[in-house]
Length: 109
Image 1 (cartoon, rainbow, N blue to C red):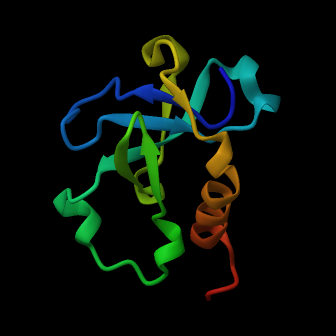
Image 2 (cartoon, rainbow, N blue to C red):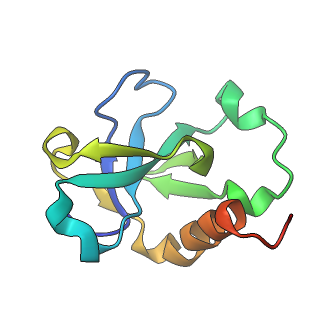
């Protein structure tokens, strides 16, 4: 399991949140859990929430489907629930890390 691997959503509401992306560094692989960010179906009502900095919710594509990264719903998941990866967003890694930096940085207040 690698950083930026995409997995099917192991939780509820799989229509609105079909996938999650692993953002945790491989340095913490032995913990048995992964920090993941939900990938919301583009157009889901939760993506219309006013976000002050649009870089925090970039659009990504998984299996030809446009999805919105929502770092405000990041969660820790047991690796046994994630299953096999279905894609990788390594090519969008810089945008994902930038989104996390926007959310976590002290630069805005």
